[in-house]
Length: 422
Image (tube, rainbow, N blue to C red; front, side, top):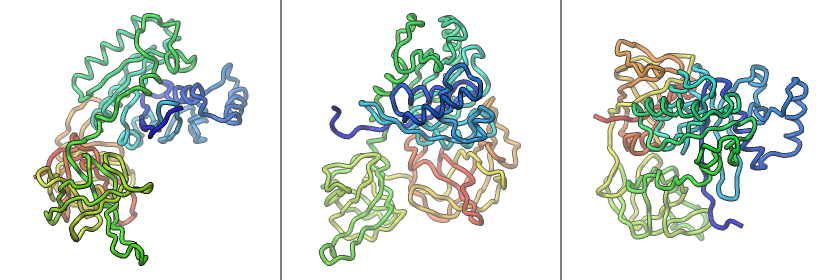
């Protein structure tokens, strides 16, 4: 029996259309016994009705009717399962280029990304695009799964060729940790257990890698960042003098007695205590949600930041960012006015300049571009109405990321990654 707090691994799957993403996830759910009998019976029945000679495990994840009819994935489907070692949240993201925004959404919070490649087809443009997006979104770990090895007779040479080609491409990207796994999701080779068909492969199966991957050090434990979400002031007589600041730790480690600084005031205090739903704790670290109590009475409100006195985030109203545009309703152009949500703070932003549009297939920068359309990515300059307490996205994905909102419709129209400030 496992005791203590089980950690959660968030991972996103991506790849070209029909590379077997949904089948792989279905196999993980099936082999880890994370599905109910009636779900399996429904999948078996649907498979028979369609004339399939096998149980199509992809049906476990392709829940949208349009996906089932076309046999493709068009939305981000989140799935949950657990093994005795770890809990998992899967974001099954689409393969088509017109769903780049879904891929960005699914990978933005992932600890690891799985990019599937069809062993018969080798590396395609979409495989490279997804690897680039994983790199852009700073997902720390990437696994390239060469799927459908059964259709190339489990040929080691095919696997090695794809591995060498992708390794050469990955040198252009920022991929800190890259792993390769040859597999057949349909038959379960190297998914949960090792395959006798590929004795030449000496690495672990995919699930073993997911269960044992060390992710604690991926989180920034150096720069203390605590965006204040809510000020807790109970109205009851028993707690009339209680005042705490609720939020999720974005980076660093906080302990009672630590000296901290409040932004924007610059005033310093010490942590008097750290409270959680289950009582007080001796320390807080990402991604814990806690309430901080300070020794001094400082005017703190939502959107403020608590950090270390000598290690503060950048305070900036002019930011440079890579933006993924997510709406077909309008385009992003210079002089556009939008709302911006950064950590717990909301402000208004003006698009000062579109520096270039990035071709996610060739990595070419189109500096003559005048707008960003749906699913396009580009570098923009923003002027914000009030200072953001931010870091570069490469240093902290929480304080370096933001979303853009259309004020008229209140819909999210873009997601941004801060790459610099002025």
